[in-house]
Amino acid sequence: MIEKIIEYQNQSEINFEKTKNLSTISNYIVAFILFISSTFIAALTFPFRYIYKKVFQTNSHSKILTLDESNIETILNKEELVLLDFWAEWCGPCVMMSSIIEKFASESKNIKVGKVNADFNKSIIDKYQIRGLPQFILVKTEKKLNDLQVQ
Image (cartoon, rainbow, N blue to C red; front, side):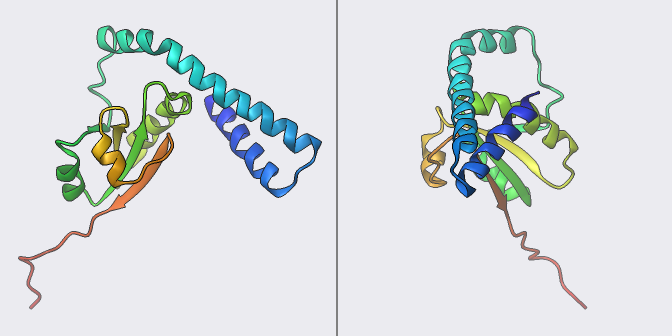
């Protein structure tokens, strides 16, 4: 269901950019209302989701790394490809994307996924010039093989 809403929002925006008529404008307005509603709902349900996660959920099976100022450089230097997911608890689209990102992280073989909470990591947000949420950045690190000699 969430994937269909996201697909609808994306397609509405694409159609609105191509052609501006009554149909595309009305679809764009509906998509915008869905976006605002999801953010409003995410903000209102934040305390309940937080308590639920702390009490009932253990994400020990999750493949997503939680990144912050203390560990991001270590992870980026260790892994060749890292998808950075910049998000916040109050961001409706971020909450909607979480299940999709979790699925991607569990199915991905070569890409590690790290979530960066925008509310608590201002220096990372500034470094990557994040201006809106959610935002995704794929970071590729070149591995240097200093000890490898070709004979």
